[in-house]
Image 1 (cartoon, rainbow, N blue to C red):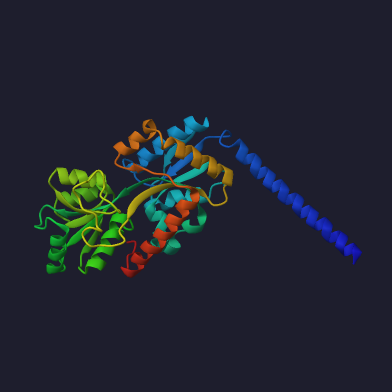
Image 2: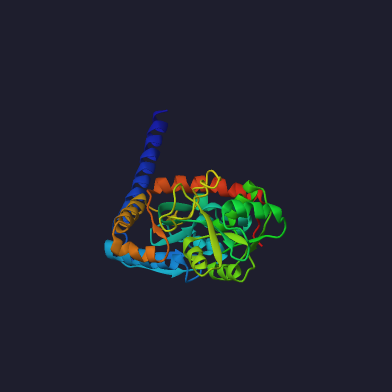
Length: 332
């Protein structure tokens, strides 16, 4: 018996030593980060959109703040899934990060199922939300309604005659429109475009009667006489659209919906690297010289702790995944 106890103590001591070596190695790796090699920040969306600006601003700031090389690398494809897969399959050493949108963080697994080789809910380590922005309900200038109430009445009186569009399946403008139609009790056909540009063309050419839209394109369509802005998401009126009522004001509850992009790493990357990145971004996002370019691109700089981000994403995942299921939304 004494021999067995001695042997067990030796085994436990060996295991503890091995664990200590692993922890020490991880700590040493984190302490050396990010000096060993350039850090790439993947973006999974087409060039010309907000993530391109976000990626460049973020990389330039982190390079200055942390005294190392950070660079943005575009890997568009499958609604952000490709960039996510590249990150998930990279070493968990903090040298490959990803700017992820609401879609991949919340509903892409529901939409793509087995076509996705990973689940963002477990494969992504949250670092911080980077930017967020509301969505607006807009009606085509080619139809009569001028207010939200008039539009809902018009939609109910014209079943099967309405089309709504979005920059893509599973984007917040798509999901918000599906939820609104369900709540308000009218039918409308969704047309998915490949990006914001083609979507805007669809609205200008009269292919769409209404849509949810992000501020930059909504403002452009409104100023050029192609769309009427009926309502905006959020708990209070948006400073960029002071004359547009909130969805709460026009009768829809629980509509604090926002599009956001966030910085994530692969699950398992050292926590002190996550903390260092978060602190550097929070500091930079307080500097107008850093964030003015984001504001000019039509997005609102915003930060969270990793824990706060995890809660926001989990809540949105539950809500928007249910919309996907309830409305039978599929990737074509």
